Structure formats: C-alpha cells, structure tokens
Amino acid sequence: MIRVQNLVKTFGTFTAVNDVSFNVAEGEIFAFLGPNGAGKTTTIKMLTTLLKPTSGHIELDGLNPETKQNEVRQKFGIVFQDPSLDGDLTAEENMEIHGVLYHVPHKVRRQRTEELLKQFELWDRRKDQVKKFSGGMKRRLEIARGFLHTPKILFLDEPTLGLDPQSRNQLWSHVKKVNEAEKVTVMLTTHYMDEADRVAHRVGVIDHGKLVAVGTPAEIKAQTNTETLEEAFLALTGSTIRDESAGSADQMRQFAKMWQGGKR
Amino acid sequence: MSAIYILWLREMKRYLRSRVQIAASLGQPLLYLVVLGFGLGPVFQKAGNGSYLQFVAPGVIGMTVLFSSIFSGLGLLWDRQFGFLKETLVAPVPRLQIMIGRTLGGATVAVLQGLLITLVCVIAGFRPVHLSSVPVALGFMLLIATVFAGLGVAVGSSLQDMQGFQLIMNFMVMPIFFLSGALFPLDGLPKVLAAATMIDPLSYGIDGMRSVLLDKGHYGAMIDFEVLAAFATVFIVLGAYRFSKIEI
Image (cartoon, rainbow over all chains, first blue to last red; front, side, top):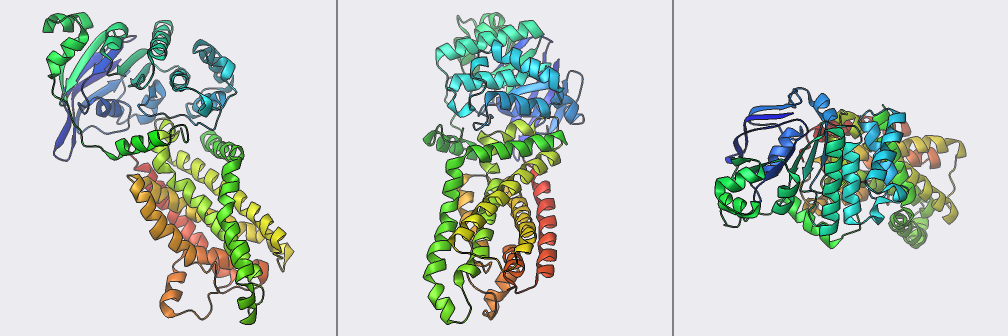
C-alpha cells in the first residue's frame, strides 16, 4: 500500500531524511519510531503531499503523490501532531466540512458520520462545540473524521501526545477496530514504545534520518537481544538526548499552552 | 464550488457564534467615533469644516472594515499550525478554492462588521446627505474588505512566527489606518504626507464613502473605485500566489 524507495529530503546542508526505503502492506498497522528530530514527521509530510522529496520514489496505492496530488489526497486520512479541528463548530459540522472537501456524497456523508461518531462514542455530543471537548474527545473526533471519506491509508502523527492512559487505550482500541473492520492501512508515529508494541504489526526505527531497523516488534527485540521494545529502541538509537533548536512551531506550541482552551 | 461555499459558510457560522468578539472589536472604533467625534468637534467647526462627527464616521467605518478583513488573513499564521486550515490544505481541493472561500468569508465578515458600526454611527448622530447612495457606500466597504483580506492572506502566508505579527501590526496596519485620512481631511496636506496618503489603499476607500455619503470627496468616487479595484486585483492575485506556496 505504501512503497518508499531511497527517499531523501535535505533542507540546505541538513539532511532530514537520508535514503529511507520501506514498504507497508495493505491492512497493516505500521509504527514509525524515532527520537525527536529523527525525520518521522518530515517523512510523513512527504507521504502526505505537504513536502516534495529531494530525491527518491514514493507510491501510495500505486500513485505518486508528487504527480497525482489530488488523487492521492483522496486516498488517505491524516491526524496531525497539532489539533486541526474548528473549535467554534460542532462535532457534526466539523465532519460535514470534511465530507464536502473530500467529495463524499451527501447521503453517504450523513450515514457515515452517524456510524463513526457512534463508534467513537461522540454521537451524544455531536451538537456541542468542539472547544468544549476534552483532549481525548478531540483526538477521537479527529480520527473519526480521518475515516469519513473511507481512506485506504490513515496517518497518525503522535496522536496520543498529552492524553491520559485511559484515553490512549480507548483511542487505540478504536483505531484497531476500524483497521480490522475496513482493512485500512495505518501508519503512526509515537513516543510511547509500549503502545507501538501492542498496536503495531510492524515497526520501523529511524534515527538521524536513516532507517536503522524494520520488523515486527518481536523481531526487533530478538535482533537487539532485549526484553522490551523500549530497550530495543534505546539499544538502536543510543541514549543521548536530542536537543533540537526550537523552531517557530515549538514557540507557538508554548504560546498555545499559555492560552490553552482559548483558541483550540 | 461546494468547497468555496462550505468554507465561506464556516466563516459565517464562526462570526455569528462569537458574540463577545463582535462586541469587543467594536470597542476601538467606538472610542474614535465618540471621543474624537465629540472631542474635536468644536475645533473642527471653528476651522469652518462643519461637523467632525459627520466627517469621521466614514473613517471609523473604514477602520472597522480594515481591521476585521486584514486580521482574517493574518490569522492564517495561527490557523495553519493549530487550526482548521491544515485540515483543508491536505484535502483533495485546489488551494485556490480554499483561499477564495476563506478570503470571501473574511471579507463578508468585515462588511457585516462595517454595517454594524454604520448603525452605531447613525445612532451617535451621523446623517448621510444622500440616503440613496448607501448601497454604493456598501460597495466601497466590500472593496475595502476585498483589498485588505487579500493583503492579509499575502502577508499571513509569509509570516513565520508570532513576533512577526507585532511587526505587521505596528508597521503596516496602524500606518494604513493613520495615513488614510480617516481622521483628517486630505486637502492641503504637506507634500510628504500627501504622497503617503496617495499610496494608501484605504484613503481611496474612505474617500469613496465620503464622496457618496457626504458629497465631500477628495479624489472623486470614480477614481476611488478604479484605484481600489486595481489594488483588490493585485492583492488577491498576490495572496493566492503566496497561499499556494504555504508549507506546513
């Protein structure tokens, strides 16, 4: 479903993604792991048409995101690291706009919105403004919305960041359910190794822009001779802390924290 | 088309739901209208220019439309990191449609705000000389809104962080307002100031409204219209171009 060959992305002299190749099969849940600044989000941005690769080849369901931009966009759903809901609108209205933007016919839109909101336990709150939702509810709504246009692939970029264990567990069980019911391929990134271990069929570990290991969690643990995925991860990527210089997005995230609830 | 409509509709819903913001955004223009309108009134009268309240009302209306429309565009900076915009940028819809929907929405909101403050002006004692020209004045409001919604998108697409926002506020938005002749007549100005007012799009918008509502134009309504239409075209094209280049 996803094919990545010798993918490279450079920003000036800095190489963010360096010769990365991997495949994700249809219906698979693939976790993309790596320390901060390893190139996870950059890779996802290239896969989702938001950045152009410097070199290399990408295929999503047989299509090249560079040349078939709109066709590819129709085929995937994405949940970003930062929230992307309209807080002033209701859950139902957020779903409706998404449906219109993705050319989902009116009747199907109605029906699927009901289905998904019920499944993600938000149906009772459909007429409430999203700004009144908790962090976990907002995340669930974003994921439900991502499924609305029946995508073949769902990208989740650190969807559980800042959620409590209850919300995280619930979120993953929902994702797994839809993955099984609709055979949606899921590619996710997370910093919680136990989540990746439980949820993902296969795992890729990226560090300094290079893919250092790919396989099932069990394979990776065996390869590094460790008990848990977290230990395997540290064995592969070392224990030095990556201090990225804060970009404008990070500064704004801090600002957003100060004003939390206000604009979300 | 349906994408443009739904994004426009979104802006309308947001506007109608944010009653507190509507009230808050009327505060500043109200201050200019009431305090300056009545405060400078006697001096203005003595100088032989008639009622200052009459004179300043179109300026205050123009100011409201300016602020409202330019902020809708500058809001892009926030919206693309933490808002709904990002969701629209990965949708299978051409960027141009997204930009048009958003900008039209922002411009419509700005005109609604303009109408609201017009009502306030009338309550405060503003009386247009020609009631029949109110629809033409509405057209000028729409043009001002389009010009600055376009400029806002162009600048907002290029901004990288929140510090830039302050810079734009102090060195672009405020000068546009103060140099527009919203608060003072454009006749007999020193050369440098006159030149500055001539390159400010808002001066043509406010002058246009003054021409049709009060018969007191400086450039004349036809010239105002032509210059504004030209600015609107340039800024919308520039805004669309910058918007198509956004990377998130």
